[in-house]
Length: 84
Image 1 (cartoon, one colour):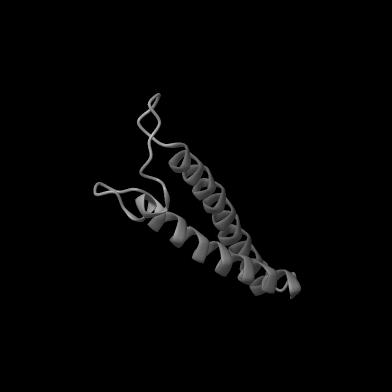
Image 2: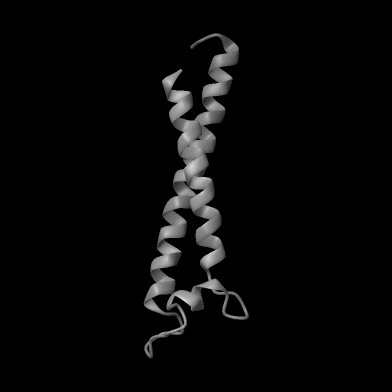
């Protein structure tokens, strides 16, 4: 039972983080990331260091979120079959 509560809490935290990280990304008009220093771009590439790090964090949180969804689905399936 503690496993399910852990997954639910982790799912809620990652959902909120994923939403915030996606909102921080720069869109066509600059987005919220330009308010926090994301507008300073590197001369070597079209994207700033802050934007690249934001991409990495978003991908990591997205993978954790996806793993929580899959784990929670498997746990529900096992709980319904009576194995747990």
